Length: 98
Image 1: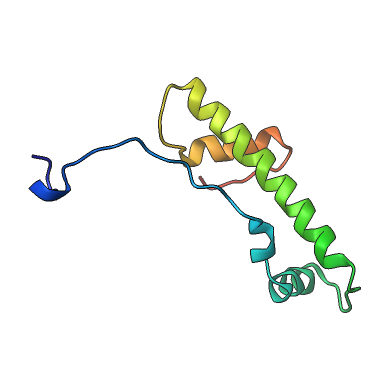
Image 2: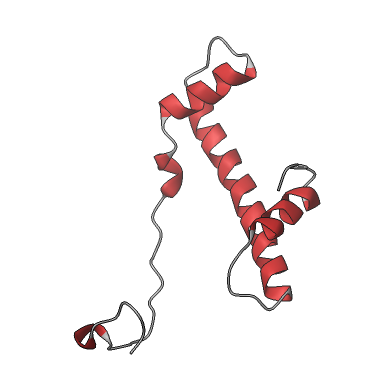
């Protein structure tokens, strides 16, 4: 028996992928405003929020897909920080310190 498993929970089954909803809406208006303030903006148009959400979603999708490609090429099952740093470097965003 594996450590931390009780006999009643030893049943295994097929894993089911979770169907993702529109998670870009989880990036709130306040979070976008804070990012804009950090970048130096004072005022934001009301139309900017959906545009920022779609741009950020595209950036995250590109980064994650590249990181997963690096992970699969290394025949690993866990995405490591090295894979994410390499994916960011591939997309032209160097990240130092990892």
